[in-house]
Length: 218
Image 1 (tube, rainbow, N blue to C red):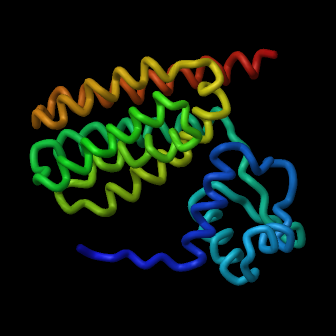
Image 2: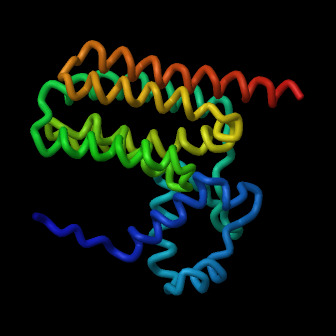
């Protein structure tokens, strides 16, 4: 059993990332670094490291003499994020289904069970559990770069899902699709896994485009 030691800046990165994804940090107000460091009980050094990494991840933008701001959400970014997800995730998950070992299969089942429980309990960590589940479907086969890309795209797309879809109660459909997806993946059915995952991602994309277009028309 390996023990993963995470630096303070990595822990701060996760905390701030969740605040961005869930909308707790507004996009039109500069992040108050002094206040945030005091709230988290840390110095500004690990905070700055985390903010710089979040900018690299595409969640923050910096302005000279003004600091960091949460990057605005746009319809164009939705197009790009979901085009990349559709190009990478389904095929990667299909491949992983065919090569996954016992530990990876157990991890995927556990990730689904935890996501299912979070949905059933309306837990606030549904987004985190969803990202863990999707990452588990592509992790097999020793492809760390693919896993990192999927996780990053998941984080970026989750911002939009929370802002535009979560309040509409569309989680039941996604939960059913996740059940079908894990069954196909555990059956090592690459074709079904690819089809189900592509359908799932495309459905989220279509829903988001519909909501964004409606918002733009107001």
